[in-house]
Picture 1 (cartoon, helix red, strand yellow):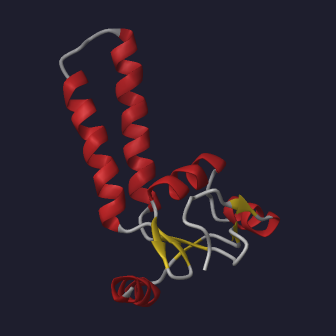
Picture 2: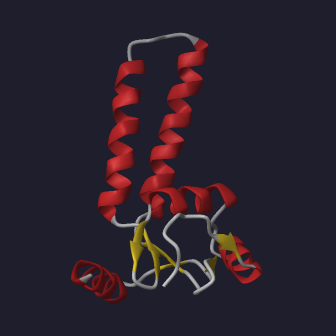
Length: 122
């Protein structure tokens, strides 16, 4: 098992796969921050993403009545972050024994079910 302090290193393979699969470096940072620790890696559940989205949506509602240029920029940024979080749901990051992220991929429904089942048993 790996250390749960969330100080993971990104392997070269993980960086290449992330680029091939359309994940940015900022996406990997978000994944590390919000993902649930599963027995063999990090998994972003729908619940994890929804918790973050809920907070961003409340900030967006507070900005809704404001008409300044700064508020418009903030609104656009919040919408981009919400879209990014929705896209990251179901992402899995296997972690090696040494705490290095091996790769990144969107798990299949079958794999998702297995990861969630194994997570509940622990």
